[in-house]
Image: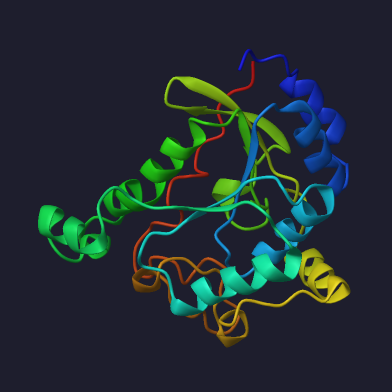
Length: 236
């Protein structure tokens, strides 16, 4: 794609826009647009926006082979409930067993960054080669790393700049909760069991009391991100 988007102007203009308007702008502006979803605790919020704006937008789900069974069941139920028409499962080159043979067992414990690289980042980068931009459900409130998330930005993937939009960037957890209730959307089966953020089963724990939403991810380590959303490159 020859970039014709004035990213700083779009980010400023859409800062206070609704999630629907942000995604509609992206759909009209980015020639090949995808949406990424983990089908986790809050995923129904963004996916319901996709269903309203255009249910044919491709939705990319990274199937690491290590998800909770509840996540896979939720993926199927939510796709049917919302009428999403193009949901694609992205899988790593190596199956779980093949990775264990090549890298040694328990890589997610010994070197979680490499495990995320192999099972999440690489499959997404390969899939995004076919797109000019993508939308995510990242919210500024979630972590300090995400606090500066622009509504519209450029993201470097390989040797290409892709337009990245975050329609829910300004939303709080309370906004998500109100939206799910108003729309009558089903919750992830683990969301009410102390899992406010849900990733791969070996790396996700329940959060007790008033813990931060992502406190249960990679419990016991300083890691809070798989790496997909970690960088927000400087704007042109």
